[in-house]
Amino acid sequence: MTPSLRKFVVCSTWGALIACASHDAGPGSASVSKGKGADSAITSHSVAKPESAAARVAPAPPAVVASGPDTAKPHLGPGRNKHDSLTFASAVAFGRRQAAKWPTSPAPLPGALLPSHRIIAFYGNPLSKRMGVLGEYPPDVMLAKLDTAVRAWQAADPSTPVKPALHYIAAVAQGSAGKDGMWRARMDSARIETVYGWAKSHNALLFLDVQVGKSTMQRELPPLMKFLERPDVHLGMDAEFSMHYGAEGLPPGKRIGQFDAADVNWVSSQLRALVDQKKLPPKVLVVHRWTKAMISHASDIKLDPRVQIVMHMDGWGPPWMKFESYRDYIDLEPVEFTGFKLFFHNDTKKGNALLTPAELLWLRPKLMYIQYQ
Image (tube, rainbow, N blue to C red; front, side, top):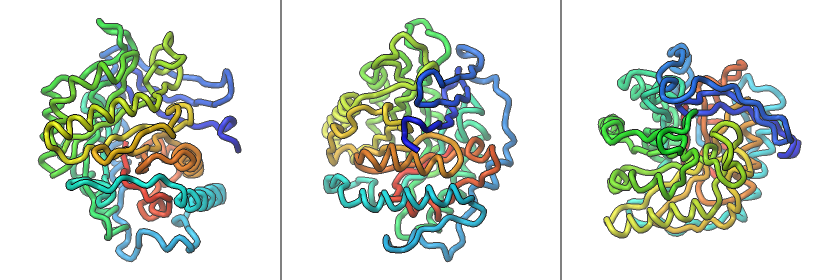
C-alpha cells in the first residue's frame, strides 16, 4: 500500500479540541469529530477506566534480550495476526537496509543523553484526563506507572540505561482563537514548575511540548527559554497543530499541520546558543511526525552535537499500521535519532495488545525515545 492511499487513524492531543479523526491522504477523505471549544473543554472530558493502562506496561521477562543480531529473523510476541507480522518483518528489513545510509550523528559531547541512554516518557497535561497518561491519574499513581514502564524497558535491554521523563504540553492548541488570535493556550510558570517538581522527585527529565496553533515557534519558544536553561529540561515541537504552509485559514484540527526543516533548524539554533551561553549539556529536541507532509524538506535538517534531534513516530492504530508509519515516515527520511509513541487506550481499543519493548527493540535504528500517552 502506498503512503498516498494509506488511512492512518489519529487521536489528537490538544486540550480544547480533544478529538479522534480518521485522516486519509486522499482528497476529501478526512473527517474530524470536535469536542467542546475553548478552555472549558480542557477539564470536561469523561475519564477512561484507569485500570486499563495499569496492566499494559508489564515488565518484560528477564530472559528477553533487546534483539538478536541483524541477521536473525525478527518475531513479534504471541497473539499478533498475520498482517501485523508481515508488516513488522518488512519494517525491520527496511530499517536494516537504511542503517547503512543513516546520517552519522556528531560525536556526543560530555553530558549527552543519546545514544548512551534510552528515554521513556509519559505525555500529557494535568488539566485534562484525555490528553495522555501524565494527566490521567493522580501524580503518585502516574509516577508509579512510569516506574513500571522504565523497568520493562530496562529488563528488555539491560545494556542501555533508561532515563525516565515527563513530556508536558506547555502550549496547547485550542478550539477558539483566544485574545491574541493564536488558537493556543500557554501554560503559566506555576503549572510548569509543578510538573517539573514531579519530574525532579523521580530523577526524571522534563520535556516542554509546543503546539503552536496559528502562532509560530519564534513566538512560542522565548517564554520557555528560562526553563530550558535547566540541564534536565528539553523540548518537543508538534507539527500536527502548526497551521501554516497552506493551512493558514484553518483552525487547528481541520487539517494536519506542518513544520519545515527551516523551523526545526531555527529552534535548534536557539537551543545551540543556549547550550553555549549557559554551559549546558546537549539538549534533546523531539519532533512529532506521522505523515510525510508534516515535516517538509526533512533532509535539510542540520545536525549539531549540542542538539540531539529525535524524529518521533506519533500516531495510533493497530500494530501493522504503526510499523508501516515508522518505515515510511521515520526510516525513509533519516534524520538522527528515532522515537515511537504508544497509546494506552487508542492503540488497544480494537483489542490489540500494546506493543512491548521486546517487540519494538527489533526496529532499526534502535529506538532511543519512547513516549506513552
